[in-house]
Image 1 (cartoon, rainbow, N blue to C red):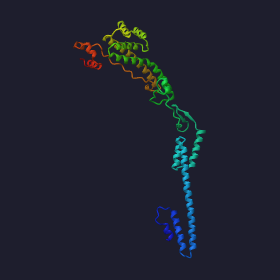
Image 2: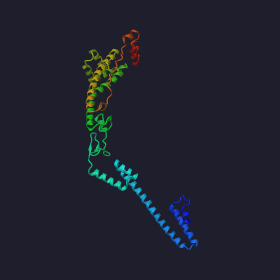
Image 3: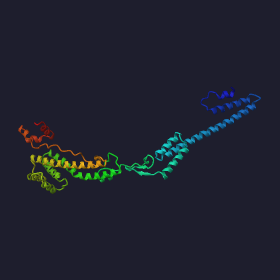
Image 4: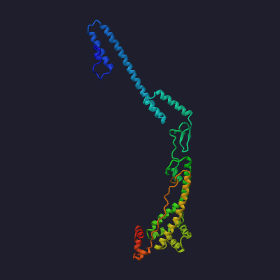
Length: 355
């Protein structure tokens, strides 16, 4: 092995092959000039040829590195462009391009083919849910073609303002139109019962508190259950007079309370609440029947009741806790005042216990 080869193969891991070769050729040229060898000219010519070849190799390597970097930059720019289209097909092309499964030219050619196919040939249609899909192939969804939830529940005002309830299921356009109709109809039909329920809840509360104010509220609450839409004192009096559920004496006592005349005895308070409870139960059962009909109708269209009715569950009221002391407690020595002073829960517990 000659000097040149020894230098080329020397331990310089940080230097590239071209750098080591350049160093070796430079040293060899210097040594050859000092050797006095009669073949110096021939040696120098050989070294010069190798230096020329080395320069050519360097230029070729630099050109190759530049081309590789430019190709990588072009792949990146093309991939960014493809992904910017927001289409999964073009995102897949970008992935294949970045992993060098396909060339930039292949990716661009496929992009142009797909764009031409979409623009000139590919047809779309709107499905039963309002989504826009391609007519061919697997009927895949057009990018951005998903329909929003088609219906917002509640009143028309709530739906228009965007504050209505969102359905629990995704329905077709036909089902959504039916939901709009059924929810509006059921809302109007159930509104009178919802009013009655509110009046019953308030009446029950006032029954627990004896006094002039609660007597008036109790009497008005009874009139409201008879006629939920009454808004003036005279209409409330008329509603009581028209009722067939109470005796004439009871009617007059209720009217007196509405007009602020006299305090109700406990027996009358209890009678009013029991009458109101009976009326409420009748109306609640009627409302349940209506709900059942709407549920059957909705089920026929594949619609759930909870997506057309948003009121509370209809629950029958518990028995009235008497405000008049029961006979068995009176016989045991308890007075009416003592009974009246007991909270409702304690009264109910004593009644349940039977002593």
